[in-house]
Length: 357
Image (cartoon, rainbow, N blue to C red):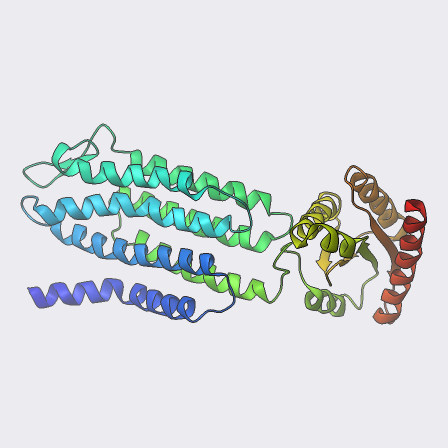
């Protein structure tokens, strides 16, 4: 009997164990992300492992004729860990934004406290003498807390949707899959699938961010210079418009007010770019103060109108960007067209400096 139970446990959790093992190895040896991102991924992985263990205990203790202490402890752990995993994922999703971690963890901490208080009080859950599960007055607190973190994650996904749609899509798929798994477990149609879903999702999220590091600029989340030239090579048989952009006086801002002020200038400028261009062009950061954009479905005059719209929006800030446009036709040399757009940009840059006096 015990041998059959061990066999079932291994069979149900073998893939999850491998995923967690791979994740811990990847995260522990990673030198790409800053320390907080690494610890947040490790936190999500660690508590997902605990959730897997508690879910297995819950699954087998539910088969007993009457509840024992493991039945209560596994239920309390399960209710506590689900929102806690989402908390760590929320920290990763909002890594590029300022946040108060103390207030963010409060819902998960309160939920965990009430979960364990429920063991003697039954305020969240209890069990009948026949080992049947019973919801208490706060039986859905875990679900409400989890929903809070899911909304928080969606909020930050929307904030970066214009610059990084791939991450938004992946996280949305992970959350939708977790929701379906939780729903199926709640209906008692399946067991032990939520922890496996979360584990797989965390692994793929981490791998996605590793890939993104080599494709995107860390500060702005825009695609980088390498992606710009890769995209150009794919568009060699299409008519496109290329836009060269240069943020004026970035060196003066860095020297006079510090690099934090320079970063703020870049981010403000990028926000204006994305607000105007995100539906009609792909924007890239190709250098410190240098940006490029590719218009795939607009001609030169239509792109010029969009650039004027961008300049007008940017005029509401204290920053200025020099812009230059050039049209590429199939058969043209991309480097030559980029040189033309750069030349136009430098003319505009000279004009802006003359205006400044």
